[in-house]
Image (tube, rainbow, N blue to C red; front, side, top):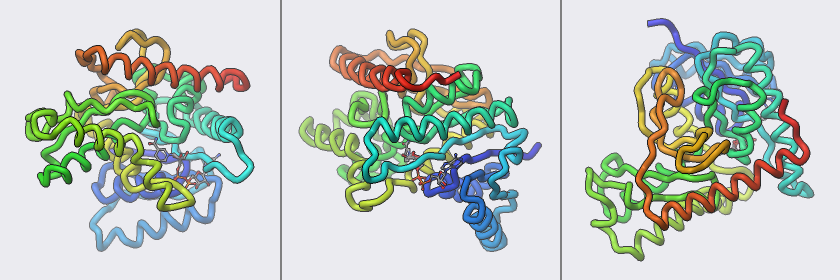
Length: 314
Ligand code: NAD
């Protein structure tokens, strides 16, 4: 089998941990690119030193030279700055949009056949920046959020029921953030809808905790945000694409009329395989679910409009 290659732009907490999960499962050769060259080289070497014990023989490179990403099958964008004191949301948006734009330009130049997974926040806006800057086809640019939100939902359901984590499958749609749309009707335990196993009040509490999942971790960490589960979510998407596994999972996809939404990246169920997003699955949502998705789309649209006020992406 030809060796597969994944590049991770931004080898910080999420990027480097994703590299770790990808190496551990021997999914692909890895290139980590970061402006912090020394740290990135050191992380790559450190990973390689663990290889003989952990049994992975993938190649792992750490560099600040973007030409190393040539011929990548997948490029993950995890580069970005956290919000610093004195920065407002728009300042952060502007800074991260510039970072994602420069990463996307390099991907288009050095790895024109790669599928792009955007992770940097604000996620939905950054997907737009990457999509417009690369000029790649819609199915080759996507955002990571829904898998993460769903795994949190799965964990909370499983612990509430005291059942195996892997028996729970969950679906969380919409934009990334408070406006996400967890769907209990499409969340099952070994095929049984969770709505038959838990009371409405308990489900509501779990839905709320899922919505606050990222914030709960930030509140404990004080500086920085979650990275183990986000990195595992990235590895899951990378694996689905490079192994052509046809995984059905929620990802931020560019919608062109699906769910009645036009020209926005939104979290929806997709089939992930070697061609990136191979299919968008349209669920039969009820009135309340549709209303929540619409309101989430309005929030994402507002964010994209903000982005357009100061940022021309081409
Ligand atoms: P981090 O600060 O640990 O890492 C960011 C890395 O980006 C740093 O190593 C930094 O040197 C690097 N970087 C900055 N500018 C760069 C550039 N121009 N080129 C290459 N590298 C550059 O942050 P983190 O915790 O790893 O989070 C990374 C991003 O992912 C953040 O924007 C965060 O908000 C986002 N995130 C998203 C999700 C999600 O669900 N989509 C989840 C967690 C984190």
